[in-house]
Length: 133
Image 1 (cartoon, rainbow, N blue to C red):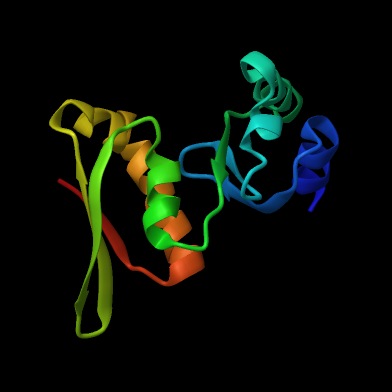
Image 2: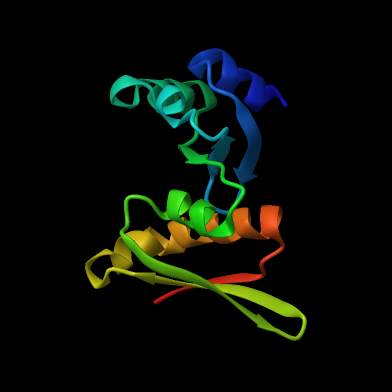
């Protein structure tokens, strides 16, 4: 709650959620749809200030009611070709097809970007896994 209050006072954007990722030592904020510009600030000023105040890397993702759009927002700036849901008994997963040139960007260093995406879709849409192709 304290991180959300700090985020909102620094950025004047609405934070819907805050995830503290201990494994990757970062804080992920989920901003209200349409508030990304405010959240990031001119030239990334707000994110830089939050990073300094929290002493941890800060990432911001724009929320969406659609799992497809949330995945696209989370993996940006990677170019997404398609997102499809595959369901097996007791398991739901998203298959994300990205431009081959952007595959490394979508996965991220040490898998950090795809891990962030997995956390978000599991939290909001009860989808167990995300695969990048």
